Length: 239
Image (cartoon, rainbow, N blue to C red; front, side, top):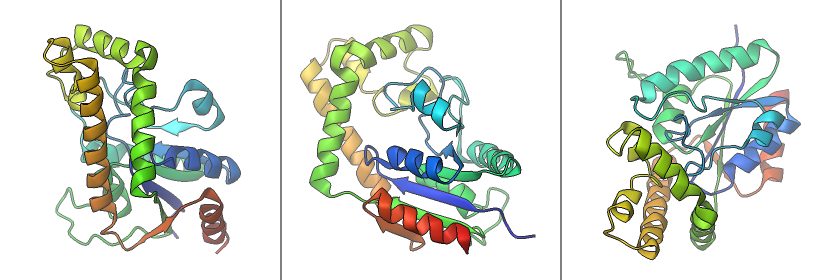
């Protein structure tokens, strides 16, 4: 039996891959599996740029809010749940879209990473990999705007305060970017402006690490627009 189709969409943080995924999933009767090491955590919404209720109502998302911030979650856990989600989506006649920027999570599924000793990491059958690529300056500006939007109005600060009151900083979830940086601010060791700069820098460094991971993968078709991605998806699904 042929493997069920899987469409994978990757890219750096703040690149716009989630918006592209929504458009493609809407057009091709799909559901989204979030391959993100931060959005798996409950109660961490603003700092992870998690899809809002309206977006989730429009397109079903899987593997959001999978565990509490004080629980450990790794690529092996993700692979298991993602495979279950793929089977569920496919059983209902829909197309699974694996979307995210956590390279190890994505690779654990598309290359069947050898958590049980398997070293034959070939690309999954019937799988299309698309990457959304932005220029350096544009991505930096998008990261800055995203951080500013998280902080404006006190949204992210309030979210972090609630989390540290409940869990403290020494839990797995609070080690994530956009959360761990607040400890110095709350301790009075840095100003809001200094915190913002740290958030800009850490998100940019994370984006560079993501790029390093994904650019090694020759199976990824790098594109710059949803229109070009849509053409590839259409061709893939009718083959």
